[in-house]
Length: 167
Image (cartoon, rainbow, N blue to C red; front, top):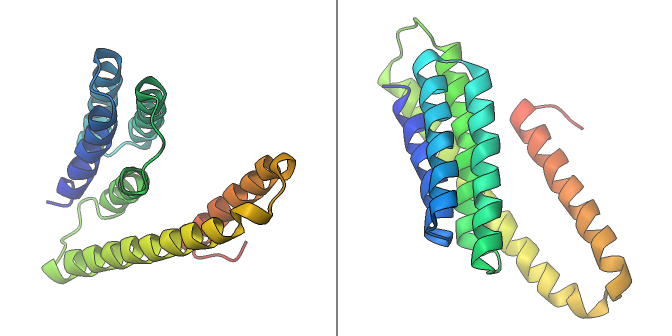
C-alpha cells in the first residue's frame, strides 16, 4: 500500500515529458525510467530510483528541446513535485519496511505532501509575479548570473525543507 504513491509519481514523471513531446526517443527514455523506478519500488532500493529520477529528468529536458517550447509553469511544477515526492515516498517506504502502518500515518503523510505542493505553488506564483515586475530593470548581461543565484537559492531552500536543517 505504501508503494502505490511512488508508482503514481513515476507514472506522472513518464507522462509529463510524453505530453510535452510525444516522440519515440522520449517514450524510450520514459520507459527506461519506469523500468528503473519499478525495480527500485519493488525492491525498495535507492540506486534504481535515483537512476530513474535522472532518466526522467533527461527525458523531460529532451522533450522540451525536441518540442522547442518554453517551460510551462504547470508541467514544470507537476514534474518537479512528482520527482521530489517519488524520491521521498520510496525513502518513506524503505523506512517503514516490515512495519505496521496505520491509516492515520498515511493520511498525515498525504496531508504533508499536499501542504508542501500548495506552498510550492504559492512560492512559484509569487516568484513569477516578482520576476515579471523586475524584468525591465535587470541588464541583459547580468540576467544569467541572477538566474543562477536564484536557482541556487531555490535548491538550498528545498534542501533545508527536506532535511529540516538550516543551510
